[in-house]
Length: 330
Image (cartoon, rainbow, N blue to C red; front, side, top):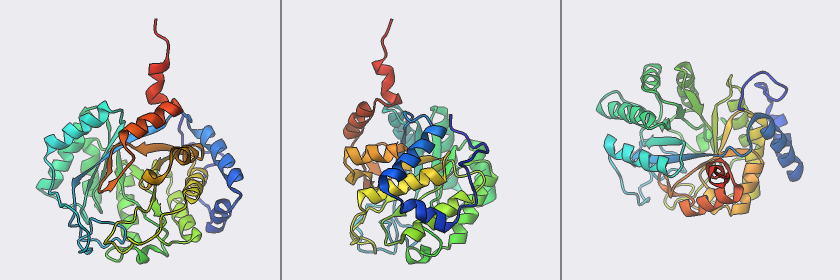
């Protein structure tokens, strides 16, 4: 049912002022509008489970203010893990599939992809995940067109490379790379015919205008990114943003709803920060247009909602992964 065909809802010419006005509209009106568009483009019972694994942890040369994996944040206590072996990763992927995941995502704390043995291992991991019947996504930092082509040839479904925030606030969060660096990688991904998984983080001190500018940038891609993760900052002690207060859950709902309106055909992923939302707030995010969650105890290096709680959530929703258990048998 998901589609990117020309229609009255899909636009690439949003202005920041238009998006800010949507964000600031009355909450119930905003959710109702987002839900109507969500129903136009998606099966509301289709909530995808994605699993995320850090295949190489820590020691990243970037200085992202939110990230405990940065080598710049000396006060963060993090166990560094060198590149995992391919068979270990594929065992985790098989376990995720058995738990109901449709997509398996792998992240390496690199500034950029380097050709060589470790990248060859990632290629093998992608092939193995696809052979298991799962969608495969990786986030490896910046990459060039040739590297994107290798990933495409291996069967990669999607490449994650978040914008984090709007262009005017970006250098308040990270200074070791530029916004244009991010966009260049996304262009390489799109040029190789790989799906784009690209979103951002709210709650880092940015303004509503910054949030709108990020969504405007995403909407400028034609077609829109197929996958848009919306994260709420998880403050980690020892990082520059470690003392920030968590975002109000209703602001999270607003961001989900606006993303759904601006990017109607994209799969909007309720991502990091979900662990502090109660069940009702998560359901409200889904009403507002979120149609994917990350499933599993861990999101790279931060805690996620427990699998038992998520199983209870899906049972309450009677979403597709559970419907087969509810149907009568002959």
